Image (cartoon, rainbow over all chains, first blue to last red; front, side):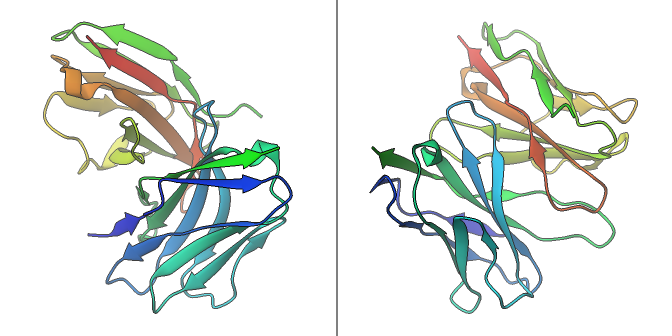
Length: 117
Length: 113
């Protein structure tokens, strides 16, 4: 079974600064997907960024980028130029793709990020 | 277009009662997932439908929990003989077939008193 660990329960960052959220995972699979989801107080989970394990290049989406270290089983999220709207819970998630089918997500416990004005 | 919707937004029930939680996926999404999120935790997988059939129900905690998706669109999660430990936010997500991006609804907060 796969496990996802987010060991930092809370982080705080000044607006416009950069912050890095950590995530480690454990799996025996070689092919998988990793995700970061954002959950604001509205409860709606929003996909921030996705990384395919077979890709060596780190994924980027505007101000969001990841540092994917496959050998170390580490998947951190870097948020640049932090904005007040980034305040939310952030979840790291793992997916083992199934041939010809969809698959479930395994989530970490999450980290609460607060952006200070 | 419309996103995933869930009703009710909040549900308070007494211990021992039966509840139904509804999920309306994005139109055309064949895959539908239910997750449960306890306070201070990440979502935990319950069940996944591909079309009308449950493709993976390995996350259902016991036989008090049951879900259906009779026409391959709307799904209902049913909980019998509710217990206080069932209190959580129940999240629904949908995705296109063989697409790894899941779109989540706002969840139903269930409180069992």
